[in-house]
Length: 172
Image (cartoon, rainbow, N blue to C red; front, side):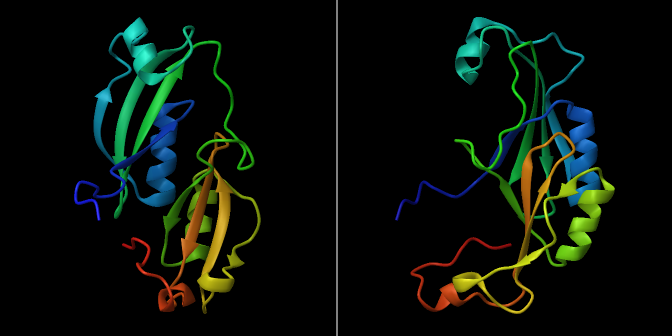
C-alpha cells in the first residue's frame, strides 16, 4: 500500500466559458466557487513556459482558471483557453478521459437539475447490472451545455461486488 497516495484532489475540465460553466455546475450539482487561480481580468497567459507546462498548441493561451467544490468528493478545476486551435469536446469513444461520474441520492432529481441548468440526458436513467446491481441502483449519462459527458450514478443498495472485492470503491 502506498501511504503517499490519498486519492483524487480535483479533476481538470476545459470549458468554453468559465462563468457559464460555473453557473451550470452550481445549478446542476450544487457546486460553489472555492477560488479563482487566474482571473479573466488578468493578462492572458500565452508565454512559451505556460504552453509547454500545459502541453497546449502554440496558438492557444490560458484565459482563466477557477476551482469549484461539490458538496462531497474532489473539486473540479475549470479552465478557459483562447485561440484558433481549440477542438470541441470528445465523445466517450475517443481516447482520453471519458467522463466524470457524480454520485447522487435521487437520480431522477439529479437529471432534472442537470436539464434545468441547460444539460441534456443521453437516455433515461438505466438500472446498473451485474456486480453493481441492486434495487434503485441506476446511472444516467448526460451532456453539459458545451457537450462534455458527465454521469449521474446512484446506488442506494449495497452492490454485489462487495462480497468478493478486496477493497470497496471510494464512497461519499
